[in-house]
Amino acid sequence: MFPAVDVCQVHKHFGSLHALDGVDLRIDQGEFFGLLGPNGAGKTTLINLLAGLALPDGGRMSIMGRDVVKQYRASRRLLGVVPQELVFDPFFSVRETLCLQSGYFGLRSNDAWIDELLHHLDLADKADTNMRRLSGGMKRRVLVAQALVHKPPVIVLDEPTAGVDVELRQTMWRFIQQLNRDGHTVLLTTHYLEEAEALCNRIAMLKRGKIVALDSTQNLLSSIAGCRVKLRLAAALPDALLPLVVEQKEGDYILELPSYEAVEPMLAELRLAGVAVQQMNLEQPDLADVFLRVVGKGES
Amino acid sequence: MLSFYTLFYKEVLRVWKVSFQTVLAPVLTALLYLLIFSHVLEQHVEVYPGVRYTAFLIPGLVMMSILQNAFANSSSSLIQSKITGNIVFVLLAPIAYWEFFAAYVLASVARGLVVGAGVYLATLWFAQPPLQFPLWIVLFAVLGSALLGSLGVVAGIWAEKFDQLAGFQNFIIMPLTFLSGVFYSIHSLPPFWQGLSRFNPFFYMIDGFRYGFFGVSDISPWFSLAVVGSCLVVLAGFTLALLRSGYKLRL
Ligand SMILES: Nc1ncnc2c1ncn2[C@@H]1O[C@H](COP(=O)(O)OP(=O)(O)OP(=O)(O)O)[C@@H](O)[C@H]1O
Ligand SMILES: [Mg+2]
Picture 1: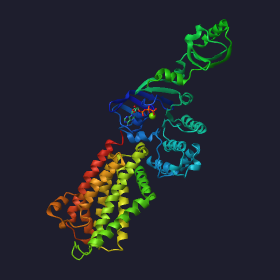
Picture 2: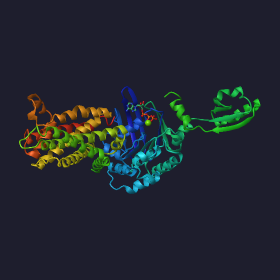
Picture 3: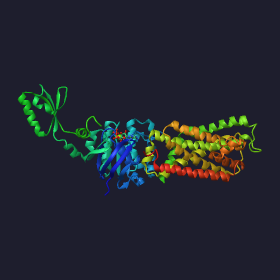
């Protein structure tokens, strides 16, 4: 079985900028894969190369075994891309847009599937509205529908939920997850890390054109051992605990503990000092912690 | 094949939706030219013996409208798609570069022919040039609009801003049109300009087209056909190579 996406030593330069610096990536069929990274890391550039919107300076890429440069027509039929930019054709209505896109992919009568897409993306009542008269979030959902008109086995979503309201985000993800369960491979980029954590089975992190982390979501999360404790105290924190503090705001201390076993000694220390605990929260590390650790805070 | 057809259909639909600007406006422009030039020159100029100046002018104006609109169609559609970004929908699809070429060029031909027919019908009211060889008329109209449609594809891909496209139009298309004998026969020019006109492909397109009406021309229509045909083959080859390389479309 071919991998859904195979990227091998891909390089891309923009003038003196090395936007992609030897990227290797292999996504198996049926995965829900997250591609994360700070602004300018190269996520969109990588997606553009996969889609043939840009040409690589070196390396090979294929979609389900079809080379994206040499077998561009076959590979594009297997790929559906939701571009990051909010683009639309102001001459047409939502339905016309989707019918034209179907035609570009060689599909003559696609109305049943188009209706289903409109329904799932909550666009049914806007079907005959001109694209210009849609709100930003609606335009984004039309982009998602456009990417899916030809039922591509590999779906690439470049920040599909930017500007989409909470409720529709949920509906949209339910739909995409359903597609994933039906066997479609999904490649997602997003800056909402909770989204990636909840949806993706595997995650790659990109920084300055290089993959700096690549593992299952579970492994990435457990790579940060221990936990964080948020404390509100009746008095000042004992000196012995000060080294554990990572943040202090408005009388709350946030401590990072190496493991859950460290919780008991910490409480003992407080008891010894006679400091009463008014409030305590234990927080699991989340993807944001992993992200900041791997990609680095501040610098990008 | 359906990809090509859909892209062609989209281009035609786009023209149709704004037909006021894309068809009606150019017809009106051509009528203004006709009114002014025929009013000023009717009494003074006789280009072909026994042919009124207005009748002489009409085929030239029709061809000029065909050529300008064919160019405008592909070039403005492409630059609009590039600037608004919606060209990605076409670039993401499994459309071969030659299908892309054929769709844009044929849509340009369609727009050119519709505008040309509109100008012709509107001018009939002023004068009725004969229709000696309709086949030559159609042949030159199709080849000329294909040539300009192809040039429009090149310009639309090359230009990054509307003013660059306007420059292309003002510094290349307009001078070549006006110096091609739309308003006069090149035999009325001084020898230097006559010689220069021979290097202008637009001259052959207009002259050949006019031959279809009057059965008279400055130069053999067969020769004009050869020149226009060769220009089309060379330009189409160049445009296809450009599209194939992804120049300015696929970064
Ligand atoms: N067409 C281009 N010309 C020049 N530089 C470019 C071009 N496209 C992208 N870049 C540069 O390449 C780098 C990677 O950009 P890219 O759009 O891939 O980032 P990204 O990871 O998608 O970021 P974001 O999260 O902001 O979308 C950036 O430094 C960007 O400035
Ligand atoms: Mg991006």
